Length: 219
Image (cartoon, rainbow, N blue to C red):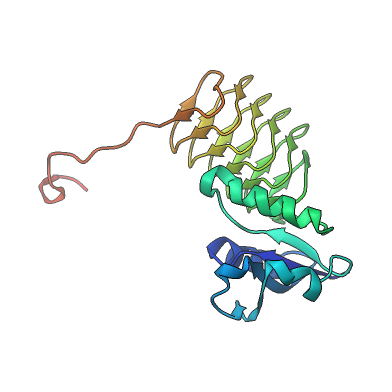
């Protein structure tokens, strides 16, 4: 059975959501919506764009599901705000789970789980969580709502990740620890102990060598 879908957003993530829902789900995307002040064009991806203030009139919740496709700006605050606003209008929030992901745990709504992500048994994924390609979520781990997991991040077993967190590209979180709400674990960081709320944990950055590339003997 084909379900009809409205997507919030007109950026790159919304374009990706349109592609994935259209090619690998039972949803048929009908339209996009953003706040009225951000409606710059009447169409996106060949579909209508309507003001969010008017979306329920044009695409009522009785006939359409909803998906919020915004990224991690302001630690996912905008995505959380629009997720809650759509629910308050009565919409059922859809999730996309790639047919090429391995998902054995439980998950909430408005989740975006990309190809080659692994979620082991007994893991729990909250609402409005993005888990990008190749990320690994270990057994008995809890990812709370409104969090963003970047590509190839590895989160071990029995970990608790708080709400509105950002776990960066290739970041590693060891087993049996807790990460507080609104934490940022940067690209390549290795987290070996509990993280207090609103903490920022950066990985080591690679610096440019003093030798120019043309002086390298082997490459």
